[in-house]
Amino acid sequence: MTTADRLKMSLGEAMFTQRAMRRLKPDPIPEEIIRDIMESAIRAPNGGNTQQWHFIVVKDADIRKQLGELYHEAWWAKRKDQGIMGPEDIPPGKNSQRSAMRLANEFGHAPVMVLICALAKGGANGIIPAAQNLLLAARAHNIGGTIATLHAVVDERVKRLLHIPDTAEIVYCMPLGYPRGEWGSVTRKPLEEVCGIDTWDNPYK
Amino acid sequence: MTTADRLKMSLGEAMFTQRAMRRLKPDPIPEEIIRDIMESAIRAPNGGNTQQWHFIVVKDADIRKQLGELYHEAWWAKRKDQGIMGPEDIPPGKNSQRSAMRLANEFGHAPVMVLICALAKGGANGIIPAAQNLLLAARAHNIGGTIATLHAVVDERVKRLLHIPDTAEIVYCMPLGYPRGEWGSVTRKPLEEVCGIDTWDNPYK
Image 1 (cartoon, chains in turn orange, green):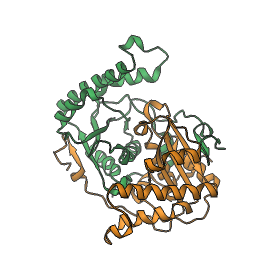
Image 2 (tube, each protein chain N blue to C red):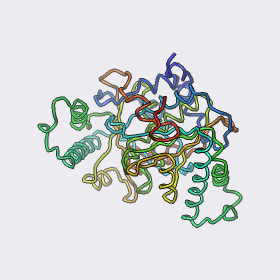
Image 3 (cartoon, rainbow over the protein chains, first blue to last red):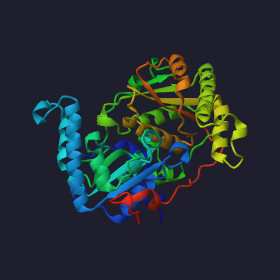
Image 4 (cartoon, chains in turn orange, brown):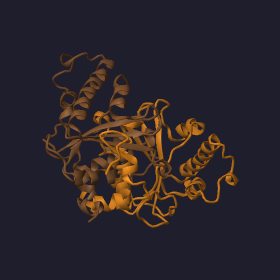
């Protein structure tokens, strides 16, 4: 039985029940599920099929702990860039910020992290579709995760920790694990607000 | 019946039989299929669910013709950046280059083109997963397409043609249509060549 056979969930269910899962159980993910997820990632379209990508699946407990601390530092560096100096600056209504802050605290507990790297700096645009294949395959196996990024302040240390060449660009750093929340629909602006017909300003209808 | 219900193909089949379709029939795509494709695109994860994207579905024959000419110019501008001045500089064995060159000639005949734009320059990384949802939903409806990009040399004219604000970034410009080729598996390097465990240089096995 191949990976394609095991991903039986309908495309519609996978795409329309996918949501960012930031609260993850520490339970390990079976080896064959990780492989299905990664085999799906590398099937994604990419610029000229030149596959200018490299992935790292982090499972080692000590490396995860260190990467968790670096992610925490990167998350707060991004907040400081926006003038948010600590939890007291995040308004109570800002649930998505609070949920992201919790992920920054818990990142190191995710049983698996996947880094998506571009072989050369500036190469992100040609390889990002792989992240969506990865998350959809994870969804079909009941594995949650979310798109997450690092920050220049930790770039050199992450590269040293994971032996990433200086010439490469770390595009996403994604936690994966069994979800503590429920799958379900996501809130999006309606199509007519974010899509035009023939021109930008002619709303889709 | 919702979009999610209509996308019945299994996730595995959609991801593992998807390939870039550069030869497209000029036959129109039914309205409800275009809507399913776009509704799927906007379900994609995106940075902080801030939806910093705008899509344009181009169907008007005259605009498609003009966009086709601009795509042709952009494609050759990219080749010239690489020192390829004309068809005679593309070696006969380079099938993917020849197929891309044919797309540059035929781009304007695609019945639909979709532009994916970031609301602000530099915002591409946060929105590209939408392109993969779009192509997978298209696949499930037997609609082909491919990721394609423009070039700085035509940027201003494309923005004027499609009323795209100067502040936005055109990320992808994708042709869609019924395929003239067959769906099937794609050639990819094996996982152990493009993926490490725990560190970049420890091959996945």
